[in-house]
Image 1: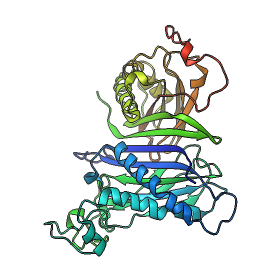
Image 2: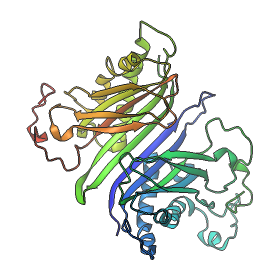
Image 3: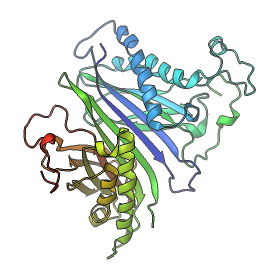
Image 4: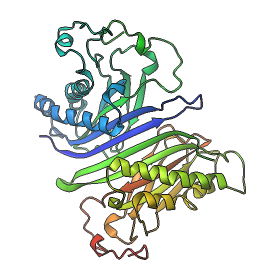
Amino acid sequence: MIEIRRVFTQVEEIFHEFGPVPAQPLLRGAIGAVLTNPYAGRYEANILPMMDALQDVGIDMARRLLAAMDVPAERIATYGKGAIVGEHGELEHGALWHVPGGYAMRELLGWKGDREAYKAGKVDDRPTGQPANALSIVPSTKKVGPPGAALDVPLTNINASYVRGQFDAMEVRVPGAPLPDEIVFILAMTTGYRIHARVGGLRAEDISQWNGLR
Amino acid sequence: MSANIRKIIVQVDEIHQEMGRPVSPPTRRALAMAVIANPYAGRYSENLDELIAIGEELGALLGHKCVQALGIAPGQAQSYGKAAIVGEAGELEHAAAILHPKLGAPLRVAVEKGAALVPSAKKRGGMGTTIDVPLGHKDAAFVRSHFDAMEARVGDAPRAQEIVVAVVVTDSGRPLPRIGGLQVQDIQGQDGLR
């Protein structure tokens, strides 16, 4: 069922946006895997087998993206995901990515703390009060589009969705894909705040509730 | 003077399959782009030395980024190309100043050897303009399996006062090449052509 035709990775280093140059550039990375859509051209009622089959793809893509960004997992501050479905598919096929795509990145970034405490929704005893990493929902977008279609993949903090200075989006496109019978599944991660972020709101160092939101 | 770089983007495109046929090993093309301030934006300058120096700096930087992204030894690079998109307040000659006088030599160091001409493209454009970076084999321009192009684009560049500079390095030719011509194993690699 899984047929990977192409893998496209992109890493962007942003040094300034015409303001003071920060000590460390912002890194933003995205990976797009171009897969055959096994349901192209017809209505298929049960598409869940593909969701299971995508688990390993998600894990592999998350690892490859982190490797391409060449930073330790601890530096990843935001994430997002998306899908672009070729014209012989439907939007619902893109939705297959929600579980395997999100789960893969959270696994990769998240299980640094106490897994059992996280699963139980409890806070462990570590001084930070942080039960684990990657507590936030992974924001997403999806569309049906032609080859080369661009998708704006939303990005938010991995532990608290309300960290305002890290709300962002990254435009991702794979030239020449998706073909009508393909889907581009996308993961994105960054190392932090927008360059010159200055509109206030919750800061990552002030996260206190560890509920994925604040 | 060194380049005022706003951002650097590196992309790797791996093709594993075409028309249902496996591409083994996958073809891999790396694209590195720098978005830089154009020191001559908005005025006519007879002398373009600053951009020529920037071209030399970026030839090394972007060439190295591509090789690094492919995870190969420099000598394993097979084809290359370069391009520039000049923002609205600049002129085509600014792209030429970056690309032609000095960018090639350090790029050839980054890919080891490089007897062949580095194919190039240039244009003026706004933010999100795409440019197809032409590709040719680094040691013999007539290798037909390696004629290719890779699309380069930065969503928020070039702004009017900026230039996008792109370098592509591959470790392979096109997927499933089968139109004959000079083959890689028959390269002489002396004159840059055959």
